[in-house]
Image (cartoon, one colour):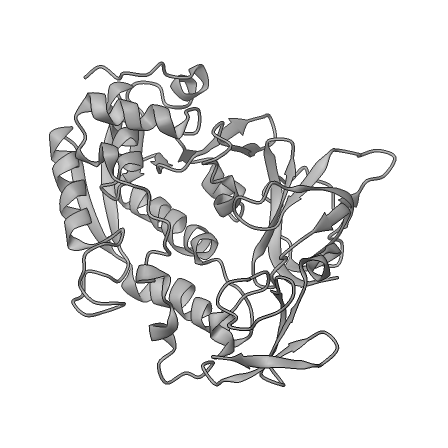
Length: 380
């Protein structure tokens, strides 16, 4: 089957005809086009859909079949694989997904933090499981529909941003180590999302016009409160400003995150934002936007995506232009100093960043290259 887009030379080099590839498919437009592209390149493609949780009726918001591993999505993936003549497996990872993704997600909110479950999923479930299934099948490479790229050098495999700056998903992949990156292929990283939708329509893929999901896959309608039934975190308490003045009442700290503006339910002369969650006092601290500004961030254990990245800098021998991205879709702020020598990461920024939420991930970039990341502990 002809593919309607020009194939980047680096992708052709990464997967020459006959390469064996295990592709994670969801039935959505991205993984569907990735399959069409790999088949066009003459790869020996195998497909797997991971069943995380949501095919069990009544679990995690009911059986509305909207999430990425619903019964409908699995059927879509199976039909897609059949169309391209490749084998398709469904792999149950429910227990692992609960342990590594859902339980830490819930505990983070109970601890007053703002988690990013997609990073945890990619680092501890999706890609390790892809590699394990590939080993079982005797397959060399693993692939997904993420918008990111890899680049091989003499000493390492570099993780790069996808060329579509609005869709780039390298932030979510910073926890992949070199063992996994050496096997990874990201077929869509060299394209814009609009190109992929056009290609899907020309290929007759049913998901071509399906909108992208903006929700966490196990949190339907962006309402996470059902996850905390019987676990606390929903006790009302005081909303205070940074001086301790009580302004109102909150409905449980699990409903809020640093930088949040909507849903506070209090009137003020200027817009107020969540500045901090104080668990000991069960208090929500709010203030004007200017009080969100931070220039110093402390993170926990630094995951070094690029082994060649120095432990600290800048200095006389290494002075790259490093930027810190503090959440997905954040534009990044230049870094004046970083230090990860004691196992954690501390950085100083050239200017203020806002809404730096403990529990989120900070990812460092050297230009397009992901060099590492860590979970935010504090900021000031």
